[in-house]
Every structure is written in structure tokens, then in C-alpha cells.
Image (cartoon, rainbow, N blue to C red; front, top):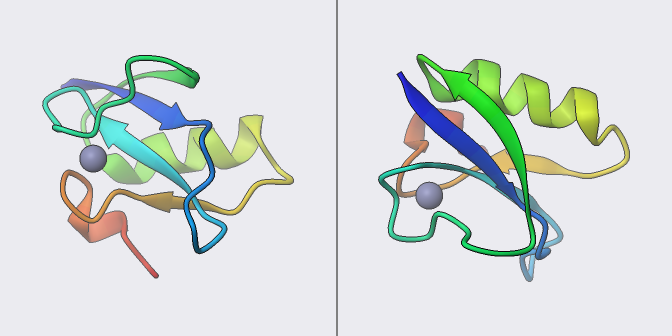
Length: 69
Ligand SMILES: [Zn+2]
């Protein structure tokens, strides 16, 4: 299990990225805490539920299986 945060700083491609707590890019500020999950998929689902207007994506480094663009 790991904690996940959504980085509220928009990426240059328009995405908002979900990070796991051991990621070097885990946001220290300007983030939304999503909760504790066993995998990135439910964390991304939660991020989309809380932020339906944002384009959510998994981090390419810590959530590779959830990274789509
Ligand atoms: Zn990450």
C-alpha cells in the first residue's frame, strides 16, 4: 500500500499527474492528497472523481502502468 497525491501543477501537455509516495516527483506542495491505495489505478480513478474537469494521468516514473500519454 502507498499514499498517492495529485500534483495540482499542470504539466506542459495539459495533464495532471498522480504520484506514489516513493516517487522523486511526489509533490511537496500544491497537491491534493488522494489516499492510500494498493495500486495506481484506483488512485487515478479517485483523482478523476475528485477532479472531473482535469485531465488526469499517472506519472511515467512511479505509475508506469497508469501512464497513458
Ligand atoms: Zn511519480
